[in-house]
Image (cartoon, rainbow, N blue to C red; front, side):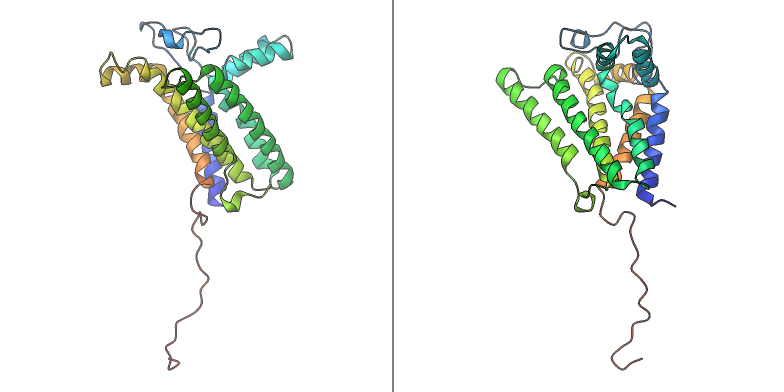
Length: 251
C-alpha cells in the first residue's frame, strides 16, 4: 500500500478531477455583465467569459483543442483560457505518479521540465494579467516580486525532496502554486466591488462567479501540496521497540 502522503496526493488529484468536470466559473443569469476590470482588453483575459454560460474546465480545454486548426491556433485557444491552466497539468501529474514506481528519475526529470514551463507561463501571465496594488514603477516592482515568490514556490524543496526522483515534492510545489493562483481570482473579483458594496454583497458576487466546483478544486490542490511541506515524518513513524527499561540493579 502506498504511504499516507501518496494516498493524500491521489485523493487531492481525484478532487481536482471532479472539479474539472463541474462548473468552476459561472455567472448567474440576471446579474449585471462583467465589471470593466474583467472585460478582455489587448492584454487581459476575460475571467469567466460572457454572462450566462458556466465554465467547466474539461469542456473549455476540449473545446479549445477541437476548434484549433493548427499548433498556433491551439496555443492561442489554450492561452485564452489561462486562468484554468492548472487543470491542464492534471494528466501530467497522474502520469508522473504512475511512472515513479517504474522509472523514478525519468518521472522526476519530466516534472522538472514541466516546472520550467510553468515558470514561463506564470512570467507571461503576470506581465499581462496581474493587477498590482501599487501604481506605476512601484506596480512593476511589485509584479517582479510576485514572480520571484512564484519561482521560490516552484523551486524550494525540503531536504528530503531535493533528489531528482522525489516526485512528491515537485508535485506539491506545483499544486501549491495552482492553489495560490486559483484563490487570487475571487480576490481579484472582490477588489472591483469592495469600495462600493457591503461585505455581504461582495460575498454574493463571489458566490455567483465561483460555484462549488471551484472550491472543490482548490481543496484538491491544497491536499496535493500538503505532503511537500509538512514535517519530514509524515506520516509519523514509530520508533522500534527496544524492550523494557531496566534499572541499574538489572531489574
